[in-house]
Every structure is written in structure tokens, then in C-alpha cells.
Amino acid sequence: MEIPVPYQSLAKQYVPVGGRLHTAFLLVILAVWAFVGRIAVGRMQPAAYPPRMRLYVLTMLAEWLVFTYVVVGVRRHGNSALVVLGTRWNSFREVLRDIGIAAAFWLAAVGVLQVVARFLFAHTQRPNQEFLLPHAAVELAVWIALSISAGICEETIFRGYLQRQLIVFTKSVPSGILLTAAVFGAGHAYQGSRMTVVIAVYGLMFGLLAHRRGSVRPGMIAHAWQDSLSGLVGFLKLR
Image (cartoon, rainbow, N blue to C red; front, side, top):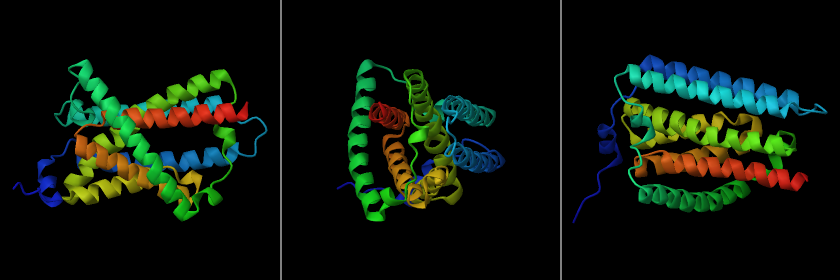
């Protein structure tokens, strides 16, 4: 009978894909990003005409800049960007497989997050953030572009790079996944402390998916789909 490899032993399979200083500076960037985002959202909430388009575009730009920082750091460390993105698709069958995995993951995640949110009474604390949702067709189009960017960039940054690095630094798969999920949740602190926990659980699920699959592609698909759907549903409700 095959004996499962302990998670601690699995950590030995990971090697650094970037330098320690590069990773430390990334954490500083993410902290500043979260702080600035919280201030920006707080200032937008009471505005009669919040600058949604400007927020969408600036957020998209920030995500791609951090994505570039990660990829450049990985390459300067002597690695290919594929180590944080996963291997390329070699056939249409592989594309369909990842889409199927993403769909199954998304359905499971929706159920788990509903339970966690209700357990924490997160819906009672979450501030009214309808002002962030797209109110016009052009805003919806930019929102979807932002959602796709978030799927690609955030999964690369958090699960493709940071999770791998933290697993190496802590010499523990569970610790690396948990710490990355905590950082991911903290980046959404503007939604309230309880929703931060819910989003951290979401990040934990993404981390487990990436570790199990050995690729961030299904996570990218599920992430982009979830964000796009939330904007579309919000847009339709506001019509």
C-alpha cells in the first residue's frame, strides 16, 4: 500500500524561486497596496459620484506592476516565469480539464464561503459597497477586464510566487499556505474584519488548489470568473 508523503516532507520538494529580499519587499508592497486601497475606498464611499473608472484602471495598473515585479524577480533568480505560472497548455484537452477543475472548485468554494460567512455573521458587518460595483455598461466592461487581470495577477503573485516562497522559508507546506492566505485576506481588510477572514478562507482554498494541481491556471480561471460574476450580478441588480 502506498504511504502518503507527509506535508513536511513535501516542503523539501520546493526550492526558492526568488531572493529573500525580493520576497520581503513584495510583502511591503502588498501592505502599502492594502493600506492605500482601504483609504481610497473610505474616501469614495460618501462621494455623490465616486470615481469608479479611475479606481478600476489604477487597480488594474497596480496589479500588473506587481505581477511584473514578481516575474522579473523570478527571472533574475535564474528561473523561468513558468515556475510561478505552471506549465503551458499543450492541448485543448488540457484547457478543458483546467476549466472543469476551476468550475468544480468554484462551486465548492461558493458553498464553503456561504457557511463561513453565516457562521461569522459576516453579512451583518460588511459595509455597503454598491458604489464600487459597475453602474454603466462601459464600467462593466472595464470591471470584467479588471477581474481577468485579478485572476492572472493575484494568483501568480500569491499562489504562484508568495506561497512557494513561504513554504520554502517555513519548511512547511501547511504554514506556507496558511500564511499566504492570511496575507491575501489582509489585502481585503477594507471589507471589514469578518469579511477579511472569509476572504482568507477563500485564499486558503486557492492555495490548496494550486498545491494539489501544481499550477495556478485553474485558480486564475475560477478567480476571474468569480470577480466577473460579482460585478455582473451587481450591475444587473442596480439596473
